[in-house]
Image 1 (cartoon, rainbow, N blue to C red):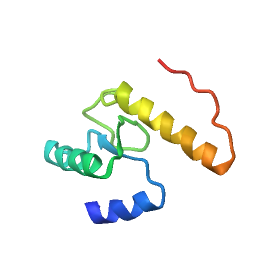
Image 2 (cartoon, rainbow, N blue to C red):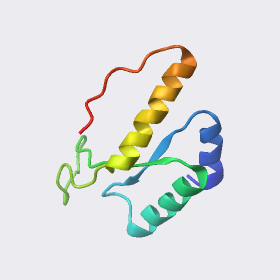
Image 3 (cartoon, helix red, strand yellow):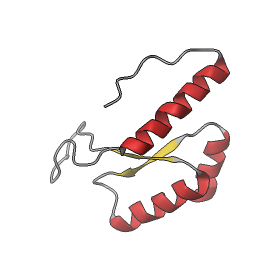
Image 4 (cartoon, rainbow, N blue to C red):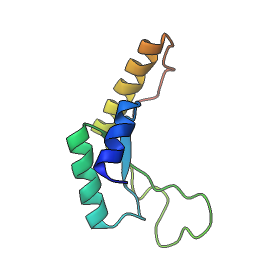
Length: 93
């Protein structure tokens, strides 16, 4: 997905993109980080282990940074407030 497509999703409420994942090459991660920076998106990481074929990486090898996690929580709270809902309490490490 390119930056223009992601910009359209931002208009629809996209808050972040998964950058750090074992399936993403270093070049792809750099490109996604640049897009996130340009579009003010939260950068997340994941090392999910569902499905088949998950080899050559350990569960938890890619995570979301604490600063990005805080940004994600702030955006969730703002979206909830805008919709008239409340955000559930979240355990912050």
